[in-house]
Image 1 (cartoon, one colour):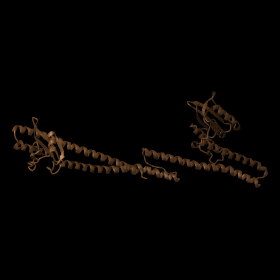
Image 2 (tube, helix red, strand yellow; image 1 turned 60 degrees about the horizontal axis):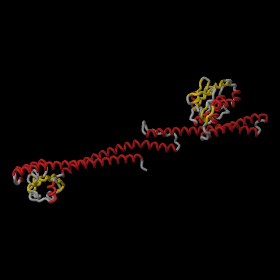
Image 3 (cartoon, one colour; image 1 turned 30 degrees about the horizontal axis):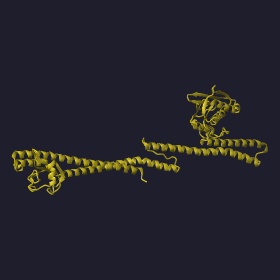
Image 4 (cartoon, one colour; image 1 turned 90 degrees about the vertical axis):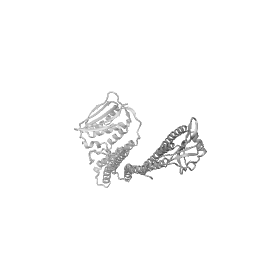
Length: 472
């Protein structure tokens, strides 16, 4: 398969070559035609002068004008100046005088031109590239005119010019043009080669990087300098894709590690206590206590599996169609369902809900889960006897729902991470043993699917989660 470099080089070189061929053919043709036309016009003009002068001298002398020495001298001068041969013939085409400007061409005198040439010259202007039936050794450009006086034909005048110098000049020009064209094509080829190489080199680097990436080298990136063209955009897009895939792979690895850790801890606890009861290590009077621990760990495993199934369902877009519902009523129902947990921590609830229904668009079941997860998280990390504030406000086309609790401040470096899967501020995982670390990630996933936002701010012992929904 041909590379982009070779195709671009061949295309550019072909275009330059074709352009020069067309330009050269046009230039050569036009220059040759122009030169020949100029030569013809010059010969015709001089022939007219000679014909008029011949008719005048013939009328004045009343005889054979070509016998007059002054007339011959005049023709010789004109022939020399015009660099042409001049012939004067009778009405029937017999040459009576010929000169090349240097001397008489006596060898031509007495020769008779063909009837066709005589007839055409007698009727008007005769022009042709000819040797006049062998009268000249090689073809010359010949112009013939009648010599007429008072409507009477008194002879013919022929001027001829050697066009070999024109042909030689045309060939010289063509040679110069060809050499120039070759030089330009070589320069264009070098420039084309450099340009094509400059354009194709980063493409090859991107292809090589893609192959390395396919082999698992996720750290490879493409560097194309400060290019702002399409190749630069492609390199940026590749690097962005590589960053995204690398992050996805990192999240996948962390997910596997986190799931393994979350599953291993309760399963180890369950297996250890069950073995202790079975082999008699744990005395009968303490077995109930350890069975309660086994039951608690089993329920935690169940919650973990259920959360992972919910997460899988959310990520596969298996959600109900969006509908209108009252976000205030939904939040109130969730608060009521968590009443026992609120009372257990002796929390003061400040529910700033709208007096009138505030309708929003969304999947009501999914948004109910968002409210539940955020409230449950706020209750779990509230200090005993603290205050729990829930507010719903409408601004423009959005409804903002905020949940604020009083408790430990979340470190600033932890805020960007709290919506990650299995993230816990306590990395030892000794605290919040009932949690599985997926609640806030599920919140983020649901709101992302609704094209909505969720944010978290924390400071001075208060933490606030705020999410948006579109007003109906």
